[in-house]
Image 1 (tube, rainbow, N blue to C red):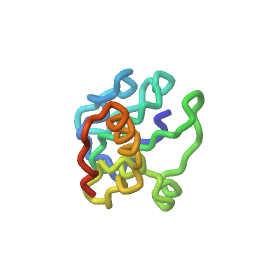
Image 2 (image 1 turned 45 degrees about the vertical axis):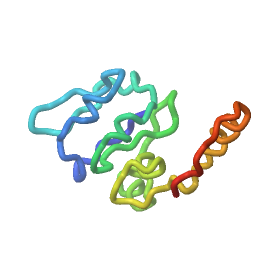
Image 3 (image 1 turned 135 degrees about the vertical axis):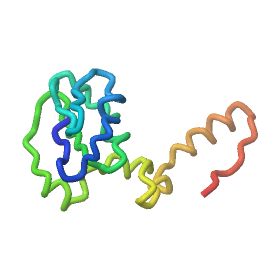
Length: 121
């Protein structure tokens, strides 16, 4: 569930407002978006994923709100971490080397007799 918008990091781009499929945020002109309907959050991580400055934190607990401290999230590298884990943040090293899903596609292609090029890593 969405828990935090960092006041110090947020650039007020309102991208989180635009990508949220359940309209959790309210846009406020010239200010940070507001988490207005937190209980409507589906924990889809779209807002955290699209935030260009890692200013959002979505806790993995989907059914209840949990108390979080921005300093702790930041110091432990958790703030905006989902974006980094899937390799969407160009400022951070890609983590796709850890992704072994290509093996599943290779096995599927092999079972169907479809030639497949090796991964480009």
